[in-house]
Length: 156
Image (tube, rainbow, N blue to C red; front, side, top):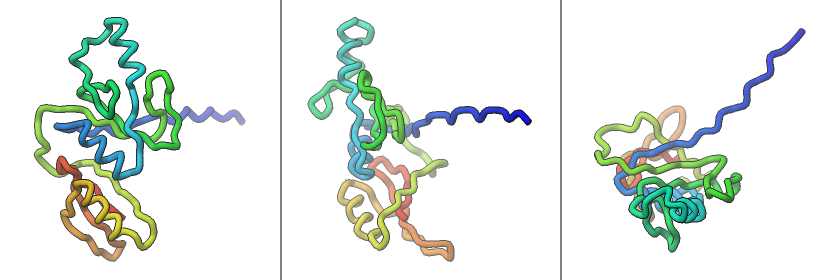
């Protein structure tokens, strides 16, 4: 009996539209204890080759960054040292001209440590999130929050 080899799992990132991608990345890096990716080596190389214009970049955290794109990554996941791009769990924030107009169709669930949901909600509020509602159902309890740009997420 011959079995078909299982295809390799696909790599993915979650992309979030933003009016201010660097502010959103800073919020989510702090919220999740992630790291803002450092793409400065790649950007410097591309600028030096004349492959991209300077106006596509800005200075953030004392280093060159893309103006309209920035990602955060899990600090323990691998990343490409040449580009600074994470190869594991990542959120990518991209600048868009339009504002958020409705409920998210996809959202993040943030899981706090046992018994620490209230403290976690307070910490996230201090970072700029807001509580939208507290949910208590037969299946569990959680807090629906919004990030600084109004994107909903839940804290369990």
